[in-house]
Amino acid sequence: MSAPTLWEEGQLSGSRVVRLAVLAGLLVLAVDLLLGPELSLLFDLGFVALSVAAALAVRPSDFFPVAVLPPLLLLGLVLLAALVEPGWVALPEDTVVQAVVSGLAHRAGGLAAAYALVLAVLVIRMRVQARHGERYAKRSGSPAPTRVTSG
Image (cartoon, rainbow, N blue to C red):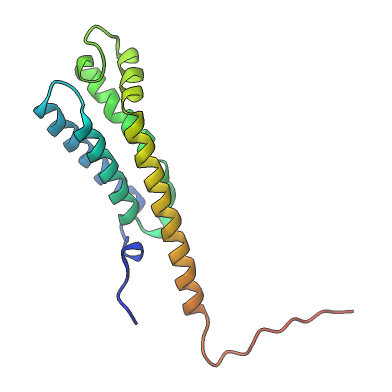
């Protein structure tokens, strides 16, 4: 039997992966804001990387929370930044709602990339799991399937 591939290794529960992704997102947000006055490409790249890592780390039975994670995580991070200092994600004089909308609009490219990659990783993992499930379901010595019709 061969070792599990990258697509088969995820064993963490969905709730644990979401908690880790939130903590990693806060870390990426903090590091990016320490390096500059507003969110930059570094935030987008970190967001995409942590979203893909979450999709690879989750166990197959918990794909749904990770599938909906990128937009909700980005909304939470942008909302937090807008509450603390609207100038980090929008114009300094914008209200919180305006800052959140502007922040989401400015981060749309990173969100689209993260969401597309997460969904692609989850689809690949489902296909690999289905293929390996077929292989292990076929047992040597089992009788061949037959079709019985009544007539």
